[in-house]
Image (cartoon, rainbow, N blue to C red; front, top):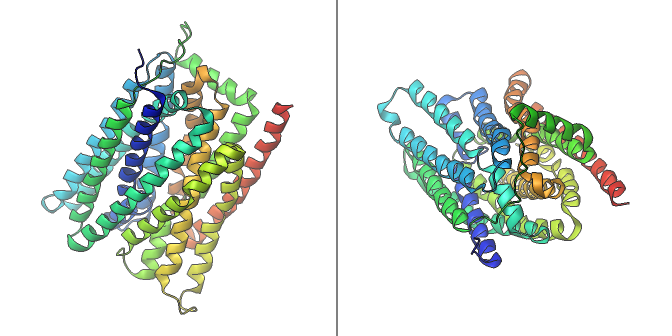
Amino acid sequence: MDTVKPESRFRRLSVAGIFFQGGASAVDSSTIIATLVHGLTANTYAVGAASAILRYGWLFPQIFVAYLAQRRQRRMPFYIVGAFGRAACLVAIAGILSLAGWLPDGGVVVLFFVLWTAYAFVSGIVAVPYNDIVARSVASGRRSRLLAIRFFGGGLLALGVAAAADRLLNSLAFPDGYAVIVLLGAGLLLVSSLSFVSAGEPVAPKPPDSGTGFADFLRSGIGVFRRDSRFRFFVYAQWLGGAVTMAMPFYVLQVIASEGGPSQVAFLLAAQTAGALLSNALWGWWGDRHGKRSLYEGVALLRTIPPLLIIVWSSMIGIWAVPVISGFAVVFLLIGAVGNGITIAVIGYLMEISPDDRRPAYSGYFNAFVAPAALLPLAGAAIIEATSLTGVFAVSLGAAFLQFLVVRRLRDMQAREAK
């Protein structure tokens, strides 16, 4: 029997989201992890690989979890495995980094990537049960508000993480400072997991009595892709979104190339967090007032600004008598704001178009279809090697505009369905 009251569940889910955002900021792949990997390897492909592994590992397991979760009324056990498992992986990574002085350099890199891959794939178990439990726990009209609270409170906590990171990176030798930061992230994710589990889980609709196997489940997903035009164009939009975000781990490399070192990484993380923090109220209001698709369209257009701005700013270095880091701080501020808007819009829109009795399946289908786009940071590294950092930002800019055009098509589809 479900004994947790709706308001209490809302608060606990909010706390879980806040601590998740704080923990995730400690292992942010576009700042902390990008500079850590660059420091360990000085290799562009390795930086791209760390980002690609995280994104692909988050997406790939979800089709399997969706198949299993769809056949059960309780989805919390899946969340527990993923949530506590990812915290354990981060503890192990922190341990490896702290022992770096006792291990061969190549051994540290290999062990890091093995554990980072485990962290990414174990984390991917969480997404399907999280989306389903939140959707069943919180009414549609309050979901954007929940996500905005999560990102606002999490942003404040992430600012604290950035301040701690700055102190640690400037007081401890490499990579000891990163080891403590990763351990801090593990602790915050553990608190998040405990709060989410304490919120409990409303009883899901009874799963259909079906003897279909996994192959039939996959064929059903292909059928959804073919029949549901909104779902299909949503997938197209996210493929283009993957092309936009393939540049993300390389923004900080542009800063390193211009500044001569990674000393400002914590400051840039703080700027990124501040952007997310300052924009949360707008995204929450917009999503609940005008709809998740409208929010998605707006932030898709705004996504064109960061790559355009960094191209312009990088070309002006040495011409304007303005501190270099200030321009990059504005770029990261916008990255944080737009990134949060996209996250709120995508999660909310997926919940909106997923039938109540098939939400785990739809989450699994969606993430399986968009998973290949998660590998695009490797293509980003290839573009940089073939051209320059400006080349990958230019491709990202073009993909952002195309994504906006595809999301606009969703407006027409929604209007036709409303008639």
